[in-house]
Amino acid sequence: GACGCGSTTADSDNDLTPDCADECPQDPGKIVAGECGCGVADVHSDADGVADCVDACPLDSGKWTDAGACGCGVSDEDSNGDNVEDCFQVCVPNPCENGGTCAPVGVGATADFTCTCDAGWVGATCA
Image 1 (tube, rainbow, N blue to C red):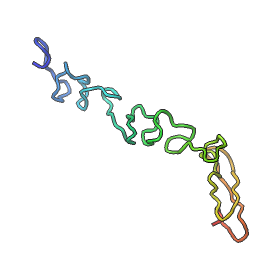
Image 2: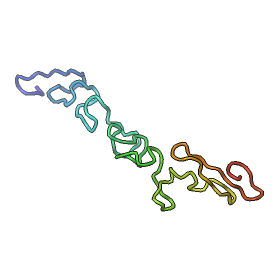
Image 3: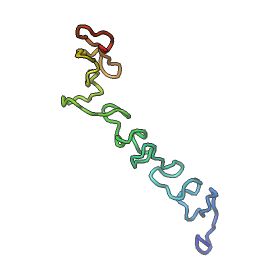
Image 4: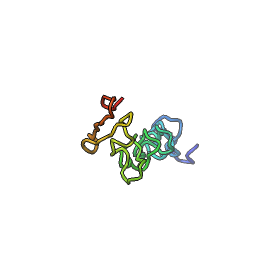
């Protein structure tokens, strides 16, 4: 048979591959262990070529080895070159419109901003 003389052709997971030729004899969805091993699907949710089981950000195709300073789903860009990621700077880019001046309030994930508006403009963003 498929497993050689004297070997059993048992198929424990009923995937039509005998256990002797099946790297995952208890996983009907896999014959080869793949990136994630037996029992875990080799899914690539964000199409970045890195399986979700080893991807630091399985829904962010721009980050796969680690979440970066800003976390998954957020760019680690430093658009003004001051060596501080934009995600930590609520006034970069300036959310105040029509020449308004932005002032940060707080730090980190709870940081916010206030705008000082030029004459004739009002509202949270001087719109």
